[in-house]
Image (cartoon, rainbow, N blue to C red; front, side, top):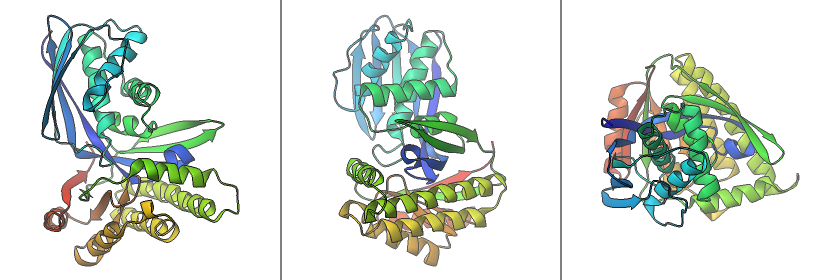
Length: 337
């Protein structure tokens, strides 16, 4: 087998956070950071050599691995092997070399990108090429069903698409249906994504919001959340139209609307949602850096944010200034391929 290289980018949730589990709509865009996988034939077993967040990790597993009682960053590998074997894939001995510049645990779907890359590399080595939608479904099963990760279909679908995606979510009993549409941007949108110093408490945020969403009508926290979710979904619909029609002003307005809803409805309701650094940064981006839109991205809290600028010069300058303020930031332009 000749060496095969695949790469999966991370994603930013531009609009429509939490709608993937509560219902509504979401708009995602790829980020420039990602994970690259180079696979080649081996004599036995499946071997992996990784550089994840600057940490060198290695592991080896049998090609008919059926257990997945592993911990740590590489737990996705035996889980993916077991899943593929259980679905009838005849895997072959493979050596994987993995390089990443995608921060883990910071709202950019690093685990989804990693899982997609493992699945894609192993199935290609076995002589099968899966579609992005099939890979996303397998990745979701590995993360959610085998490893118990609290995730939905948004992350693997967005990372597998590798381009802007608009998703509509319809709850049906205990399930939620997804309808996804890729969007060709009508121009170049100059985004900057950034992360704060410490990871947010995503699990606690999701547990808190899930409890509120399940509360009866008339519950103050539940009503506030449901109102915010409706605003998030509406903003995602407006943002998808703006992205496809090359209208950055409308996209920025949708972003600001979503951020305002977060601050007014959720900001002070629970300490885990309080995000003073996020609020200061969004305000500074709009008032001092020239951003036409700035908001939280992902679960919420002082985790990650995204801002929109009218041109590349402003965006790159903002990314540098954000780094000087103690954040990690990236210029992340979105345009038609």
